[in-house]
Length: 138
Image (cartoon, rainbow, N blue to C red; front, side, top):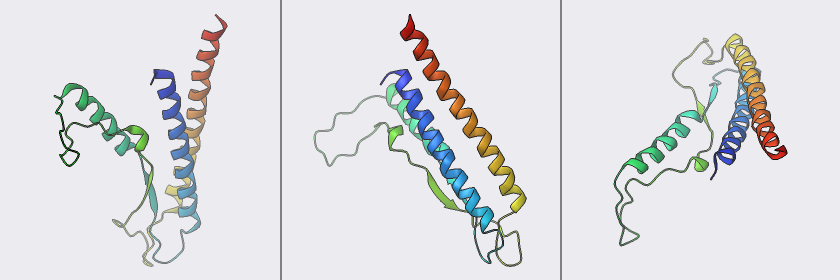
């Protein structure tokens, strides 16, 4: 896979994850007064980092030959395209007496941050395609 395709694929995945993060945060904000509601977060970047690290480790590590499909696969890279964003419940804190742990002000700030991230990702995608357009003109 060439670097352009990989970059665009990663940008698309990041935009999808940011969109999901926006939906989850808006849902948290809407349920900020519901008793015993636990806020949700989206986990994606840590799994993506783990996939990239496994690719690097597979390049530098030694290769083993498997003679049987039942043998354990060692140093097999974890493909980043298999990584999907996950919704995770936050059980670690309780902000209110009714068991709800959503802070409306924090969630509103998260929404602003998510909107700025999405805007940045669209600009990066536009930049990638403008570079391709420049190369194709020459």
